[in-house]
Image 1 (cartoon, rainbow, N blue to C red):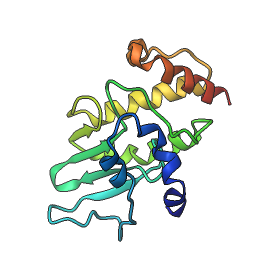
Image 2 (image 1 turned 180 degrees about the horizontal axis):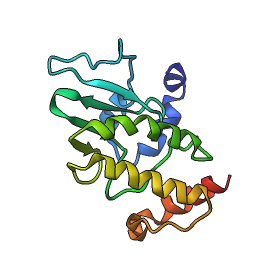
Image 3 (image 1 turned 60 degrees about the vertical axis):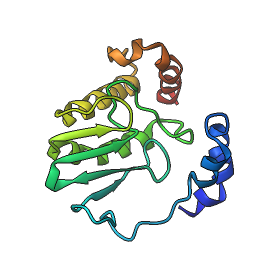
Length: 163
């Protein structure tokens, strides 16, 4: 996590056109969490660090509620979006695997982008199928590919899969 503090300005530079200076000032101010539970007054929320979408990216699993909050993962509208440093999809696939069990046990999934669902494992399976198709050199029939906003991301994922 120390490298994130050192590289903070470079990591946030692409956001400058979208965020105001006051938001840039607070963005990316990370501090290590004390253990695998979120320190908050609510029910126990297990932290699942996966690094797939970005370094130190995480999901939260609130077992008592059967809720998985997946951040920028498991979307029904966005294709898997690896970190820029993931040039081969390996880090993304490894991170996604860390979400398999939480997706299997959760009753509800709330992604950062897209629609909440009561079928978390279906979202996990869709992302895994898409990545497996790319890594095996097969065309994918994932419907998210047809979204014009996903064209560049899909092309980049194809390049990563070929690496």
